[in-house]
Image 1 (spheres, rainbow, N blue to C red):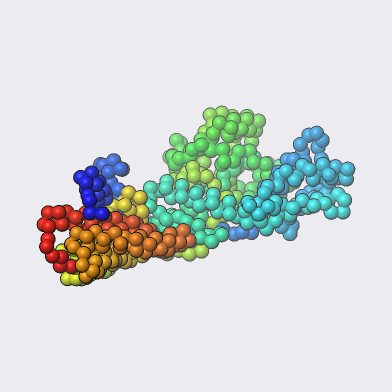
Image 2 (spheres, helix red, strand yellow):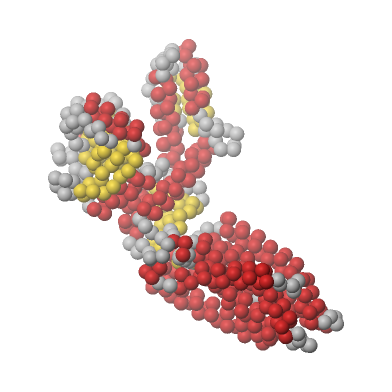
Length: 533
């Protein structure tokens, strides 16, 4: 136990020095580190409660998810029934009551229609159920009803996609270390340090960014459009900047091209008016589709629609074959840039509403850091004094281990890119106290071995050996509790758990391995005749 060959001593010191060096960038002003490559500047990021910023809680409506799922299934059914070999004539599809219902005109084709619809349904996770139930009523009426398991799976999938899209949008803003995590079944927590005005953030995250290109229905009667009555096959959409003065326009229901087929979007300026616009680039299939549609509809107007509102309805003067287009619509530079970010990151699968909004000022964060440093300093000084008074030289070894342990924790957090929160500071204070627990167990065991009559070397050796088992078991149960908090907790609880788990790992290494190495070196060098501990 007290045998430390040169390679082991070198490895211990190298590990601790590396950990402490990784903590240095966290104390250096960020501008001074800018020229260095990323791997040379691991840094502990400050959470919202320490650096200030914006806190948003976004919520999706399960009813809207169900409506979108039903609409998607309706479109699939229409496509499947129009498929040749043979075509199946059906009546209008009703979506009232949260289910689809339609009549098959030829009752002999009902079974064929059901066979075509059933493959459109999918398994709802691991529940063993399908996402839709398909039944036949009165011999020729088919109903397609979403199951609860299917709706739950759709909501879960939509929230997972929405979380990733929000992460992409915030990353595009260049914000450092945002906290984005799902809460419950239909909520997403967003915390962005350093953003004091949440208005732009709300605008960016609340925008669904559903982009569509549709033909304008020029045959619609303006008087009927003003009364929001659309011709068959068309729909009425809001058009706030309509040159005619009527803030409505009739467009065909069929989507020419959608935002799903974009490969890039960027803010730019119109070459003629110098007004801010959004330049978009379609992917291969989107570019071909857009070119074909503009070729077939030259000299006809088409509507550029964002989240159900028409931005503009320009005329197709000539085919657009390059796969590039321009979106205009009374943008400012900031709003055009936000739309470009939203289009690049993809459309949200469901609309998100802000249900909670808070802003934490930087002064409050500075006060929290100051209070945390004071608490940590008092705790460290108290522990150092107690250990030195109680255990003398061995207490000083424990104190050196505590200081190194704090620096190594910061270094590990920097390497992992972890975020330090106010509860994390509480975890630091707790770690300072618990870091010496292992040393207390070892030193008391050494005292006990001395009272049993063992010599100095044997007492130290047996003290570390016998106490190590207890230390290991105690820290395993400690780590289990921290792991549960990390897995099931969120926000402050998770911040506390991260520091706690890192502290457990580093404190066991420094308190047992490092102090044992110091004790072994002293015993070999001094060869004491008595042990005052």
